Length: 251
Image (cartoon, rainbow, N blue to C red):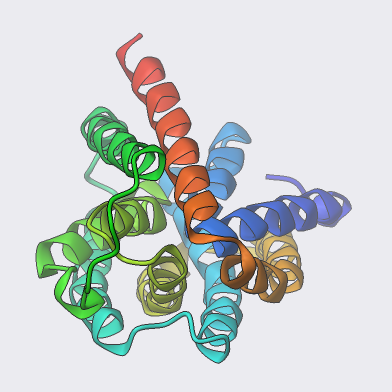
């Protein structure tokens, strides 16, 4: 897992992951969890470490987005309540579920959603009046929270791309999903805290420091980047990551 000598590596990973996550609403958990799993960490330990760090990074990121007007309150609560329930269920079952079995299904879903986002970016429709608070049915948050706990990531990629595909302004989708992520992270970290031993402290500290540095900058980027560019980047990142995940899962 690495010791204090590796903390600078984890700081850089946390900084890069949070810049992407805060600006596009995804990839923090997936990036960090992939690194820990590659270093030999068990799924429960990887998930606990990442979500413990995310408690701090998501708090600052959510506050930054709220201060910049990127959070819709109704949408926020429609994500938080089912998301916490799904995260709790996933954290309790993580020892009995093989997250690898879920990857092809989730990747297939995200390929479709990422494609829709890119299509709407390239072929924009006339603006329409949308109430974001009505565009997050409870099953969406429940599934995203569950997957995030079991697989160490997925909250942002599922929620942000789905909301943008349904017409929510990118900065609102990204900011609201980031703000809601705090409660999901607290739930998972709290339930899995017993598996975070001393060997994980450098990982948690490094990810947290890097994420805290990047969070305000990423929130500002989400507000300043034009909606069409943000949609295109979001759809493109999700499509590339999902196709790669699907290919590795099926090989």
